[in-house]
Image (cartoon, rainbow, N blue to C red):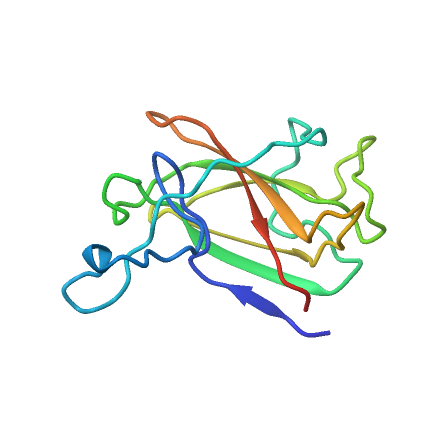
Length: 154
């Protein structure tokens, strides 16, 4: 199976960003590189479940997907947020969410440089919804952020 990687994909509001790049000229830094924008909030949906286990391998039955990212303060999009807690959840390979257990769910913690990574599967589209993964991010001194990462077909 192919392994996909998404680098520096997530940030937090008011902390950070999800691999969306700013397009306005004012937001290009002095090296000509685009800077990361703040991440928009998105619907939590009906399938969030608290107390997911801490683990970096979430689901293995399906096409593998590895996501690596960094949580940054939204004020400058540069300062890492250490020890942020990230809840991740998505449907299983059959298009259903596990509400009895914790398949397709995990909790992560960023390191001192705001980094995190996990391996899971490309969740399938279901009921007219595109492929997506939910994130809920919490850190001391910041507002909680709930958002989603939408994926293209692989």
